[in-house]
Length: 157
Image (tube, rainbow, N blue to C red; front, top):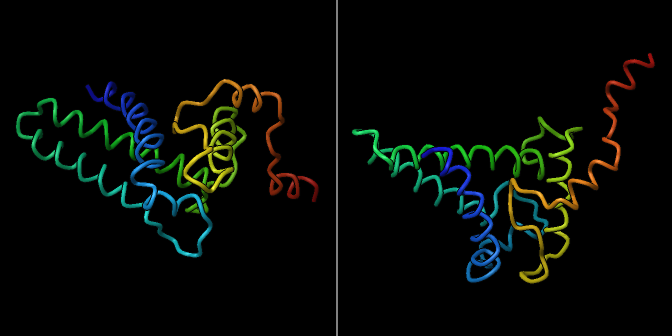
């Protein structure tokens, strides 16, 4: 149940991003598509929604460890991966993980950059978080991974 929920959340995230965030809730999501000087943005309210949903499922399903508990764990797991991949790796909101040589993560980053190429509600592409279109995967395979400058400078000394 947890694995199915985790995998299903990718579709939920894609659908919500494509039709709701770039639709009726654009007024909240817009903050994510424009540069701003603050640490937080209106778009962060969506974390609260999914976090509350996950927490409620876990709390109400915990006594009997029924389906609600395992669905809540799946939503929480997806949210955790989303935070590290999207906010930490792609957007650099925490500076401890800047670049990756991993082909999949580089392809994901390229696809996300294409999504942010436009700052309007229309014209974006690549609405998923973990699924990468094959064209970006092949592009990441063809381009060499960035070199770690710290390792290069210490080996040249």
